[in-house]
Length: 347
Image (cartoon, rainbow, N blue to C red; front, top):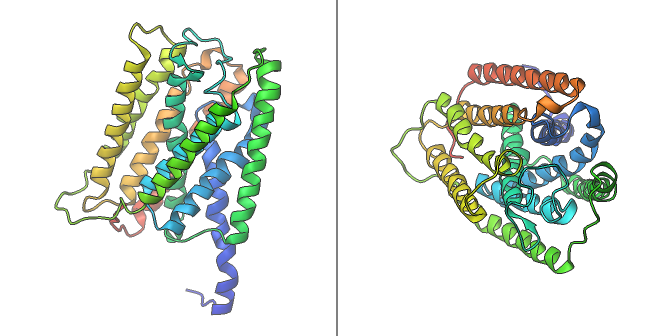
């Protein structure tokens, strides 16, 4: 092992911390948008503002929670706050009438909110934009898992880039895509509605702060299940969540929208408590984390291909290339995790 003087280590440390930071900035939109097929090759230019907003947003959430000394519950709650910000403040997709051709576009639209779509995006964006990319990044850089990756200057820069990305996303969607691509009528969201959702965001941030110690491990005799069962669990919990999108784009439902929402909330809550229950068991380690993230990524890749029959050939081929590359990446990551010494941890 080569000796590195203390002064040189001090100089190298910030640069090494930038590697996981930039990895997370890339993975957040890549997993949630590209692997899911929401952002395809034919309009890959949208990836830049997604890097700015989703990437920097996930990074800021991770850094804030690390400064709080919090765990994954706080990250999930801040992910929900980021989803509300995107859906109701920036692109306002959950407030304006849906511009896409859908079998039941108005299903669940009440009081100026697309409730079914909104609920799906709350779960999707908090998990696949925030929780999963952060988890994968910390699996790639386990030695920096408990460290802060950004100094004050980096935090300020990330906030500025995040807000600029939000502004670009707002303009690109509301001023360009909706009227020019989807030919949707202009829709003004009332300021009272925006203020209401800003209050919701503030409450979620407060809840995330007060929940920062939830992951602290209590004495327990239960043992974590086999790692492979986490792959199955992620897929079991993930695929039914897409049922909400089926209710809008795939089939007409005869049951009241609030019944569909209630069942979905219960399902999401059960998924959280199930994973939370096992993750504090003895023997929980990076193999289990890998299983959860790999299963979650398989869900968005497979479910995201459901509408690919109408895509241009270039987009279909592009998605296959990205998906195969992602699977290979997870396989290589698993080999690396299996080869390094395992250590059970509480989160």
